[in-house]
Image (spheres, helix red, strand yellow):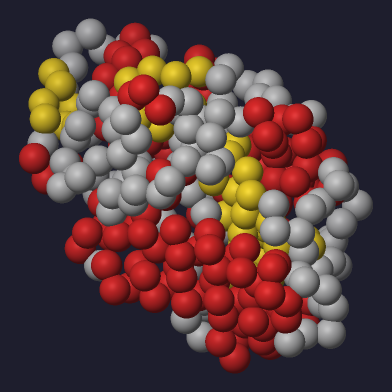
Length: 324
């Protein structure tokens, strides 16, 4: 999701040539609209590689010779990480180290953005909100642990090797193209399927009591561009997030209020519950905003409407979907 929106933003707002790193079997649905431009000498290209294959990263870095690197790739699903913890740790920690090592050994010295996660903070007591950058880590999933490693590896390469690596902890961000393993996106998908009569009017949820601060993915990628262009500071680390906070339950009620159906039953599905949940994710983003001047522009209501419309369009296209 984020990589596709970042490509959109950079192609529209800069004169940069943009290259995306993909695996040979990646699903490219999120960049369908860009496929005609790929490798057609139209500022957009792809190179093949995998975080778990160091030689492929060396080859990709050597081919592109980048001035900027946005490292967004990861096994990014917290719930999945409980089922595949070793793969998550391998991909996110050692994969980050492999990428930074390939950059370090290359011929250029690009500005690098390493994307960690707000999940590194995990379970934060309410009296310690909002969460500022130096709050101790208390990860609540193998994914969160892997992102602690990602965060620390990024900062280590800046401090040990003098590389311009900066780390972000982006809090909840969503919008069109959001994967359906995330709460708000699976809710929107289920509503769209119900509206088209594809499934019964029963919406399945996990924990609805978690507090989240919501940002739009299109605001997030604008922040990432500013991160690497507005006085980039080697070794810096920032919280980034939106302005609007509410529980997952309140977010679901807002999505339901947008539906043409008023008979949708909400049911808790035990399979959707995490063993441990990071249930208070409210950031202090003063440091990043002061440094760059960034602030979110897209409202929570617009984000949720656009997300639901995205799934309505996909469902109306007639595709078959696994209901998750």
